[in-house]
Image (cartoon, rainbow, N blue to C red; front, side, top):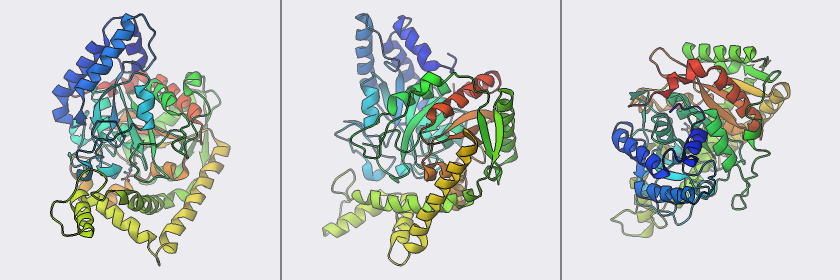
Length: 487
Ligand code: GLN
């Protein structure tokens, strides 16, 4: 089946009884059994619960009821999204065997609409990483070339969706973890405005940055899932929901839309990526959009601001993993302090420990003003910079990542260099604004390149509209090639 508008097509086929939901689910279960050993996308596979959900959908079809658009569609969740009774490990030893007793709001919303959960997908430990290789379960690999990573931290979702092991999935994005793997795997990933989607039940990394969002093969599916998620939730005081349904205006003409570009976004970007993004600007011009240059010199502060503030928040959030409340507990200890210290030393991986230490340092007395406070004030400056840019344009186009997917093992070789590859995505989380990545070409090795579209706060409708028109215009050239899986 062609990827474009996949959810709608599957929905129509289910409703017309061309195949049953059980048959559809079994096809995905078979694909996971065949291809997951090569991709390592799923870490908790749940075929029984998927089939039980599918049978409920089939019973509804048999009764002649009309299905919700997301009903019966097989999907996946990143493993930091709480699911009652289903392991939720965040790719960490410290949460091994942990089964939540409640559902995250995002999963509750989809489950109540009849989504069929195939399982939980791999991720960098506690969402810290860019290659998925900090996971205790090992990396998730790229369906375009399994010698390369799927990206991170939502690498498992991207690998599963691009490898056709799920129709769509939910990831989380604190500094790029939805957009970067979507870019590496040639699919679409949306990081919503901070507060558009509830974070209740999502294991926190850096609470003032974290957002949940959809990863899918095409823009229409991304929009459908986003509309289902963006609801105000009384259990998350930062959640506000969406202003409007993005699906209502998805297919609008974009003549006269102002697409901004900032030269600072192209510093240090690999030639093939820069050229693909420049070609994309040309596509917009042909669609009748107006190209506007904007200035964002503050972007150079984004990486240090992100790594200081996110580590500070992580050091506090991860304090709750103490061997008493969840998952792993050290075996030999003489008192409670030793038990906590041993549990944390044995349970957390290297990258997580590095960030807890960094975060504790920048928050400690004597360094707080020099690092944390300074980073907070620079955060305010970045928010302002984007606000003034959006006075001159509706959407900003930029690369998602300065390069294409890394080879296996490369990210671990140089931590600082890997941090630097987050340069295009982290400014968005700092500013709390929405952005998505969608495929815009391939490099010489056949690895996908992502175009990042950035919107103003709560302007997801404009963002997805711009993305949809780009996708339509490049359907033959970009999207056909993006359909490859491992089979
Ligand atoms: N790569 C970034 C990091 O390592 C992004 C993480 C994220 O968005 N969860 O922090």
